Image (tube, rainbow, N blue to C red; front, side):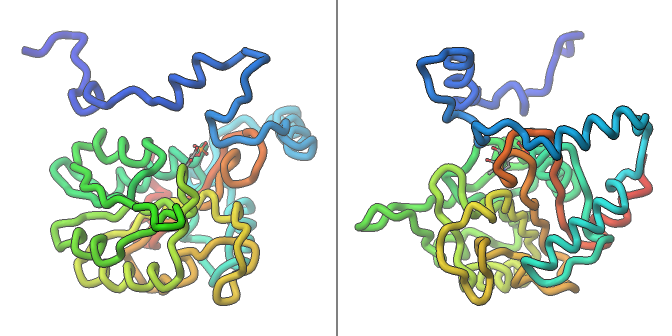
Length: 271
Ligand SMILES: Cc1ncc(COP(=O)(O)O)c(C=O)c1O
């Protein structure tokens, strides 16, 4: 029976966030260090705060382009090209946060009843989003090796991705383990997903939190699907570094997602 207060079972059945539980208990306490959210303890740099204030003072408070300010998207395309292979401006969309970018991508891809595969453990929002959309999540676990480093069993992952798999969710560098997918693993995953027709949704918000050696010419950032994906490929979405997790300072919320032209660019005209 439908009552006026019914909410969707897919949302009601989601477990509460442990991160939020810890944060709610600790926020405002001087004797507890705030390690709960992925944000710096540094205040947002003056240049960013001043630009936001100047924009408000200038009255820039009106609706703008759906996919983000053209000059911001151009700057993001140039930033991305400096780290990876070029990504056209028409493949970039700006959102109000990383979590919105990921939800937007999953809303574009998933229908109720779809199956996604996720590499876990992972920041729980990433796997809650498909559940909210009515998709089921099949989990492939990272495991610690003899030295305690998290490793992926690539064979197990590829076996889990079948033609029934609508999307693969990869967060690398990974929250919470720090595990990162190698360039060779990315190439193998991409080739496999092309065969099965599976989208790759890569959450790479922590790509600049990379202290390892540059891999295959990629210095100062982790191996990225943006390095191995071909311009013509339909099958990938990448969440670029967002305000807090990616840039290393708190707010203001802003993120971007790079995706295929037909999937993303064409949505600029939607209301
Ligand atoms: C792996 C991962 N992806 C995405 C996000 C979302 O970032 P935002 O705060 O910009 O929504 C976070 C935030 O903690 C994260 O840990």
